[in-house]
Length: 84
Image 1 (tube, helix red, strand yellow):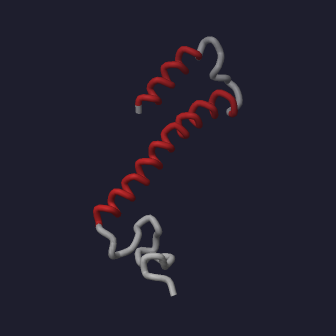
Image 2 (cartoon, helix red, strand yellow; image 1 turned 135 degrees about the horizontal axis):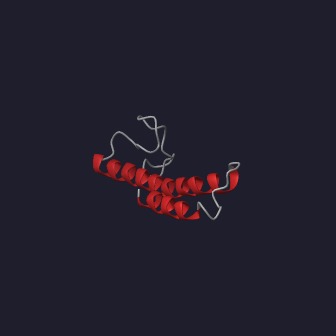
Image 3 (cartoon, helix red, strand yellow; image 1 turned 90 degrees about the horizontal axis):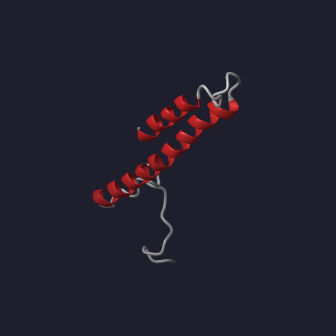
């Protein structure tokens, strides 16, 4: 029979692996959840920026956003979106 230290963890009483066990210190849980949320948001922002640029430029039908008349406005819109 394995020791308690080497046994595979059972189902979490909180219903989520992210929240961990009920006996765990709240500081460790807070750091783990905060790191996960920060990583998710850090990844989501560039992905949403790429979607916002690719959809209007290449996927959506006419009028094209890559015409000479609109390219300056596109550049400004990209800068505004990148700063948010």
